[in-house]
Amino acid sequence: MISQFGSDHCRSRIRRSATAIADRRIDLMVGALRHQHREDEFDCVGFIELPLSIVARSGHPLCQREKVSIADTVEYPWIASRDGSPARLLFEKMFQTRGMQQPKIYWKWDARSRAAASC
Image (cartoon, rainbow, N blue to C red; front, side, top):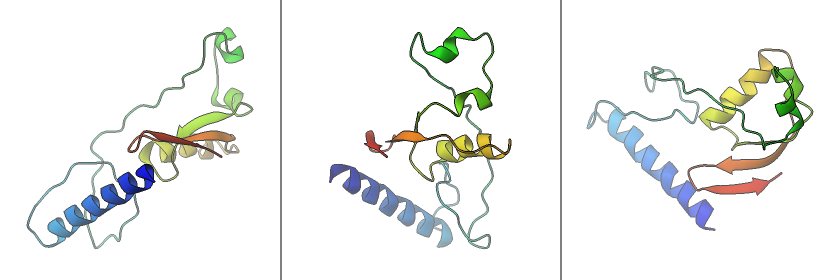
């Protein structure tokens, strides 16, 4: 319930901000582009692309290797950001651009609400 409230509240604030830009009450907004928009609605320019890191427990089988490729990781379950988040889109793109299947997502993490859900 709290997670849903936080998510709804955040979406409401973003909608108000987008409306303020469209109404010319504010000029610019900095933030993560978390949804698709009509091209005639806003001009969005990528500002920073944050790197993603792979984190594993000490002693994980992949940690025993000298080099680890993206293909090596597919067979393991992952914890990933929620669907549609910028980090999740980058994560999915990492596999798609290599023509690889997406790995199994065991947990979805939502940093905005600090909540995780099993899949």
